[in-house]
Image (tube, rainbow, N blue to C red):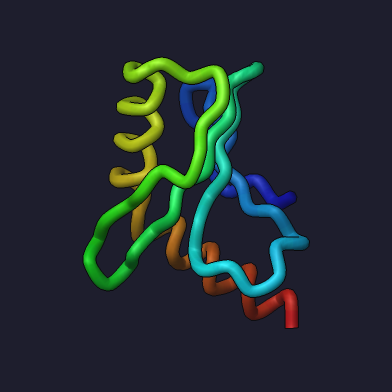
Length: 84
């Protein structure tokens, strides 16, 4: 589970064993967790699920993802290359 960002206590990472899922990130801070799908063509994100998070937490995570969108996509592509 490589961590690609660690910002304000939020760990942004990928899971190595999620077969052929499209680009997404997992985020965790203490007992708060979520997963977001990224659409690199449309520069959009969509929440897949969240656990123990309020609306403020979700806004913070969305902001982190958008601020680092290109970096996340770049890291995803490198990560996918290494898997094969």
